[in-house]
Length: 513
Image (tube, rainbow, N blue to C red; front, side, top):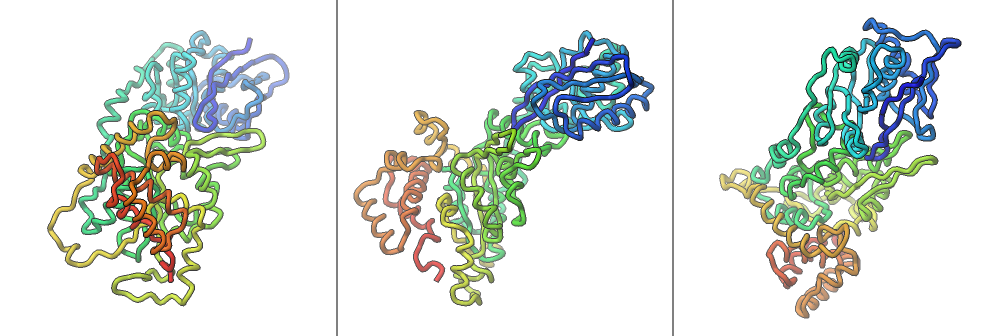
């Protein structure tokens, strides 16, 4: 009679329970796995045979059929080793089968029986709880990650002998328990860097504060060594802390991608992802033969930083346009489509020209006529359409570097950002999936970002005299609404508009000569 064991398959950031059925019968000895297994699953029998024989356990020399149901879903990876091995041990009478269906069992086996880590432990544990499965047996290195889920007994094991002892009742370890809220609140604000370390650059800090307060995308333009990367890396320290729901959602993505360390149970700080400009389309947005989340999903609820923006391939930048709008990405294949969330803030940095010194206060640009415009044109208009703030970064002079005056710390700036976000949360309660000013639709901008006559006149004069493009209009209104929120002002004032207009450098005519 077949023995049944619960395993799990991860698609996107969700898991689906898989029933592994093992039947041992008389006939010509052989091992057969059915149910759309990939090569890694088919190879599992060789690993299992070695692991069992190494540890004085018996691999039956009979006909063994392993079915993985539902049979129309492709099973991928080596994480089913422990499920299949448990089925073989139970079907051959080496462990009792009565208690097995109370657990989801997953793990990769080495040839000596050691149990190796798997990907996606958190979504598997969440699905087990949904289906009222009592417990989850998995590799020891993944136990803390799965223990984040309440109401599921999590047992981490290091060796297949521990699994045998567990079901034979010889030695049953205590389940791994974790206080999710304690883990979360103990490290929710633990950052290695702080804005207090930045000398000078007060105007750049102000622009990043506005970006954080409204969830706006921003681009930093300045010469080499001006501090663009240093400032961008400190942006997560002034963003509102993750709430518990966001932390779990972000952890699921990092779990599926195998990016969680063994000591890390929960992602408690906002991610900061900074891919190199040689990154491929698939690495950025996700995909592959076995779809995996890309950099934009790993930056979910955090910051995606693209340094040297014009050096990225054009196709790589263009595939970001839709995820920037929809805040999720769908990877479609012939037989499967998976969704990954990708709600992130885009912060880009670039030199103003190939030599890097266009508009520099002291050094002269050596680029030929037309080269600056050609360099800037590597970044397409549709992508710039999705960037609200254009920030010119100038070098820090010696007096500011040598100054003993303390700069404002991240904690102080974050307080202002959090208050502005609270105003926006209250404003957008009637709207679904809208949390901050940057996510407003054009119609919402017309309804919410109303300005007085003097503001209209200022905006009209600015667009005419500075030669601002039409795409700058909505962006200026969104940013000015955020600046007003930082001032706790109900209405957008002329000073809010004036500050917002300063952040449209790349839309100005003749900016690049």
